Amino acid sequence: MVSKSREKAWRYVGRFMDAFASVEAAVDNIFEIMFNLNATSLLLLLGTLDLRKKVKLLELGFEQLEISVGDTLNRINEFS
Amino acid sequence: MSFHNVRNAVAHSSFNPVPPFDRVEDGKKVHYGAGIEFSYIDPKGKLKVPTTKQLRNRKQKKSKQPSDHPIDEAIITYFEFDEYDAQLRKIMQTLVEIGETITPINEGINFTRDVAKIVASSDNIIPFVKPPKRDW
Image 1 (spheres, rainbow over the protein chains, first blue to last red):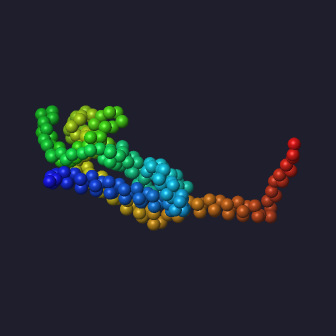
Image 2: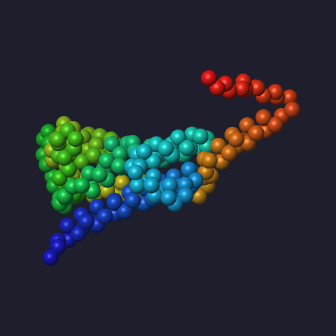
């Protein structure tokens, strides 16, 4: 029998991991569109780049496109 | 610290729920909210989960304890998790909106190529004549 407090802890950890994975999926989606990647390139790159590197590349891409995304990307890597 | 660090700490640690508790600090009773204690060891060898600077400062201000105090450094409270969740959902929403409007960066490269073609095709531009290659 699992205690309610333990179940609550599982729920909170699970929710956090789910939210983080959703952010990473949204980053992957932008990465795919921004660099116009085909399926093979996408799978190879996403498998080898960690989130920090992807975010760094997106920052460079947004600079190139002259799009300001505010502090959204910073909040993933340097949230304070 | 970053969400990335928090995620790694959460993903690679065993954890246990911690009930709320009160503690007397500097003669004052301080309340600590319920949360989850993680067995995460940071790169400096301390049992300390990464948290945001804001939350860390708030904790320190509230507890008036040194930053490496062991009791709440290994705990992420449910309140903190709620704040993380709200922030992550907000970031995700923004990223989804960006994803719906963004165009591929490669178009910029094509644009540069097009400009080069236009310049090269102009009548008043005399291209450099490359000297013939010599076979030595």
